[in-house]
Amino acid sequence: MGKVNYKNQYALLVYLVLRDHSDAGHLIEQPEILAHLSTDYGVETQRRSISRALDVLEALDFDLIRNRKGVALGGRVFDEGQLEYVLDAVYSSPSISPADADKIFSRLTKTLSVEERKRLAGIEKEEERGKLASPHIFYEIGTIAGAIERNSLIEFTYNAYDEKGKLSPLEGNPRRVLPLKSFFRDGRYCLLAGTL
Figure 1 (tube, rainbow, N blue to C red):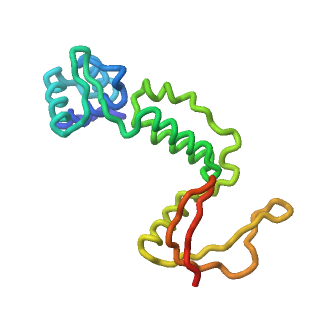
Figure 2: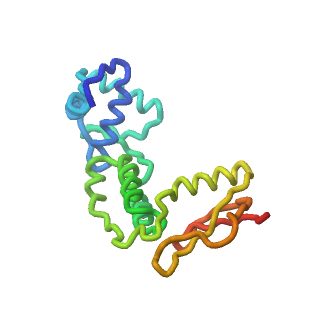
Figure 3: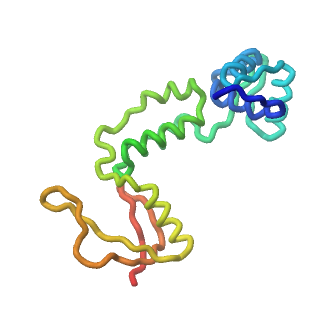
């Protein structure tokens, strides 16, 4: 990121520094926050501005750990155990392609500090994952969820693999249904729908 002139936005920048460089086991002191502001965002400021920014974050109910050893962002969206469980589910799902699983991993781990990311970097990835994955799985799930919410019809065609291993549509017209509920069971997405 290039140099940016942030005068009254120190609280946001301090939050980003704390998110990336602190956790309950790794508190950082104000000089380290100042250094990260300078190197990561090109912002030079004084310790007094850091103190005010921390006060603003606390006033906005951010979970900060503050003591003589330094300061850290306390609460996270997921704790490490929860995140590891979610990532294991993502990587072992036959419905999610390897590329999509890696994108999800990247997005979810951005909620962690650098130290926490290092600990999760060795997560075991399923070798055979994604063999049945549709490249459009998230679009399809979103489309079905939207149709359920709007109480509108969807149309699809059943496909099957032929003897040469090629995916081909089955005979017959596309199917029109009223989707009622989608759910995940036994490694597959399922749709409960009314036929017309």
